[in-house]
Amino acid sequence: MKIKNICCIGAGYVGGPTMAVIADKCPDIQIHVVDFNKERINKWNDVDVNNLPIFEPGLAEIVERCRGKNLHFSTGINERIRKSDMVFISVNTPTKKYGLGAGKASDLKWVEACARQVANNATGHTIVVEKSTLPVRTAEVIKSILDATKKDSERSEIKTFDVLSNPEFLAEGTAINDLLYPDRVLIGGENQLSINALSDIYAKWVTKEKILQTNIWSSELAKLTANAFLAQRISSINSIGALCEATGADVREVSRAIGADSRIGSKFLDAGPGFGGSCFKKDILNLVYLSEYFGLYEVAKFWESVVTLNNWHQKRISKLITNKLFGTISGKKIIILGFAFKGNTNDTRESAAILICKDLLNEGAFLFIHDPKVSKEQIINDLGSKPYSENKKQLNSFDVKGNWEFIHDIDESFFEADAIVILTEWEEYKNINWDLAEKRMRKPAWIFDSRSLIDPEDIKKNDFNFWRIGDGS
Ligand code: UDX
Ligand code: ADP
Image 1 (cartoon, rainbow, N blue to C red):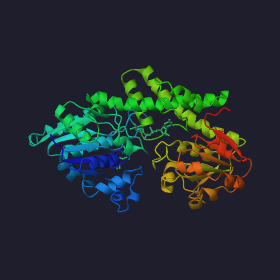
Image 2 (tube, protein in one colour):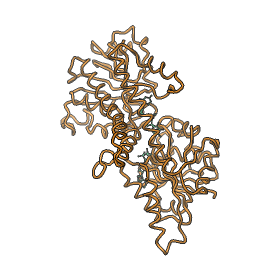
Image 3 (cartoon, rainbow, N blue to C red):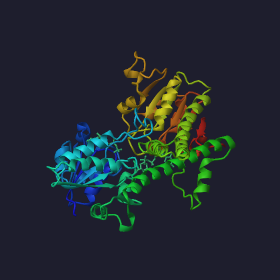
Image 4 (spheres, rainbow, N blue to C red):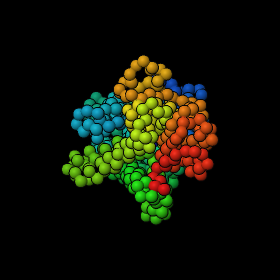
């Protein structure tokens, strides 16, 4: 079974980069990335690759190389499904807001819509690959929708389907590197021929030993488990960071000491403002829902505590900022550096900055928010209110006392500022002109570094009060 035409439904953070890398490595396969969001597709087709809808180091270069040759972006979903022998489902699966499992289970309405669209439009034999992060046994949902169409006697001879689970382990900001040099590629399925067809694609650049084949449920559960384990490490180190601050220890030294133990390993031990991103919280809550569903309440509680600790930790930071600024920040000018959930991405989903900024606004602060890649419109969306200059007379929609502005020039924003809060680890924040900041800020001026980005030596000579995550000294 040799794959010649691929269609990927969903031109987002997962679908876009994944298909770009497959196109680059497999010039003999035609790849069409489709999405019902026309605006997003237009951005993928923008002649200037700096305007792609997502920012990911290395992505623009690949898109420039392959677009129009074997990588195409369009809204022609049905037509592309019809012409493809493999369809990736890479759509969003947010947590359900209402109904059964609200707040925990994933909303599968987009996945279900895709399955129906594939069922109705596919021709011949089609391999359907689940790429979105999905709850365990979603393949069953997809399969039963596809099979229901197969039962239609008129079409039964011309349509056959196989479902594979091929979870994505890429992390935003390093997506291209993660795709080019994966620790492993996981393929879950029942039909060996289909598994081989997908393995052959990855084998163009990944060694055979790294392509793991499992049953479909193990593959789905492995994805949730990997994210739960990673998130658990972050909550663990953030909990220890709080203890360091209370006891005089330094969380960076503790991380280094425990990370040197080869059984623990040194990665994912950086204390920060709490994990964000579209996957961690959602996947853990899925695991919690699944455990509760099967009556495993202790298991559910264990994993839920990882999210509870993360929420508590983010609140802890906003409270701490208020307390250090004499218990009141009403009308005080606070510069927020970074709004994305981590460096090197423009994604703000579940970013710690959202909760922390909302808390500070609720205390009446005037925030000056900077991020090199996140747009003002995105921040308006996330905070639910417009910047002060656009909204002077209106009350903010979530009824806060504070205000905010979006800034491009950090140096200009220093005037009379009371504090600088670093929330995202952008490289450029390492080069802040601290002498200028000190000259222009109101005294006593505070620097809050939630990412251990600043070298304390760099600001020692200036007259700042300095707080750093997990630093009890
Ligand atoms: C994650 C998984 O890493 C990836 O395998 C999966 O496919 C999708 O979910 P992502 O959410 O893009 O990727 O980013 P990741 O690098 O895992 O960071 C998640 C959050 O944890 C970020 O907010 C980051 O700042 C935070 N983090 C990460 C820490 O606070 N400390 C660390 O040591 C590592
Ligand atoms: P992820 O991080 O999982 O890639 P994104 O939200 O970035 O999530 O991308 C998912 C994309 O899937 C969005 O661009 C959305 O418009 C698209 N999408 C969702 N449902 C469908 C559908 N039924 N058909 C086509 N595109 C869809």
